[in-house]
Picture 1 (cartoon, rainbow, N blue to C red):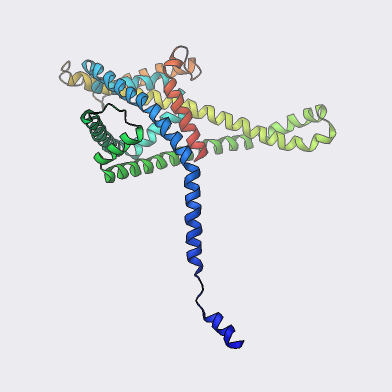
Picture 2: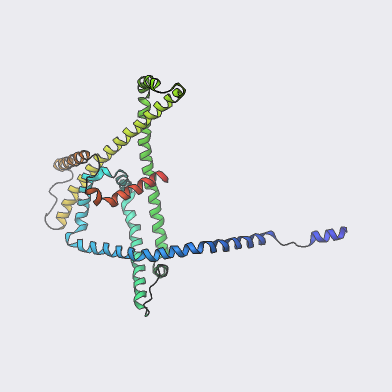
Length: 327
């Protein structure tokens, strides 16, 4: 019996890692079976959205082609500066994000964007060529078009560009979070400074109107209400400062870019207002003052129908605000 026991112990048993591998393989197979219907739905959704996306890209290309007689590359910066002068304070987060990108390096952003755009054009041309060469008129699915585009693009360039843009995005979000966190901290500090004086006058009134069993909540309510009012004032100051900054930045960009456009188009031999001259600064300050007063008159918002016209910018403002608060 002793030898039998020793023999049983010496017999090689099935290794547990193999069992674990089979179990993992089985779980992955079951998961793939469960995910497959959802992947098919995603493919169907891509098939339905692909024509609209292609049509949108074609419309954008056609619109850009129609704008060429008006020299959009030359007049675009001046028009953007004018928009900043009169409407920049409305889009606090968007302007702050644009400034963060400018400080980080706008050229780096455009390098990555151009790489993605060139690869997209190469993939799109390959997909169009493959579609033209097919004798059958069967419609390709979005997934098949995607596979064809993957053959034409450079994966290293695409990955490098996406990684670069993601790093820039994280840097911009971090910059904005610090900026708005400073505004909240300032607001809490303002509320704490005026808490004592508000407490002296507000507590006797609240004790008369609130039941005695709730008196213990009076002090915390006064304290946090004071901080809330302070944060509100800080946000108002932040918006006012943003409007002033947008007016100055936009006025500078409009005056400088409009002169450069006139020189490029041959209407002027050289800029009339030199950037180092006092007259240039006076024109910029005057235009910025007009823009800021215009923004203040509308409560740093947009009147109808401009709010409809700038609806995409409102959507971008909402997305950036959500990203700042969630990341």
